Amino acid sequence: MFPFRGMPEWARYIGELLPLTHFLRIVRGILLKGAEFNEVLPQAWPIAVFALIVGALALLRYRQTLD
Image (cartoon, rainbow, N blue to C red; front, side, top):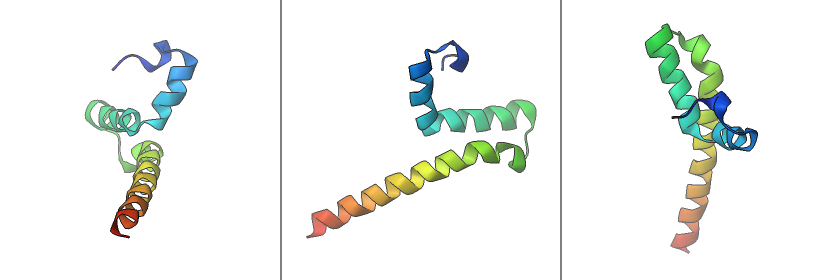
């Protein structure tokens, strides 16, 4: 919940990997600025990629426990 530009550069790179960063940008855009779907789409695709990666890892891990 700190200003993104006030963070050190290495912390910004880590922040860009976290889905919460993109979610907060989406919520801020919708609630404060009245952004539409096409305006929040650039922030939505990183969340989708993260969900796919975590889902695939969870599926692989689950399959390993069944064997």
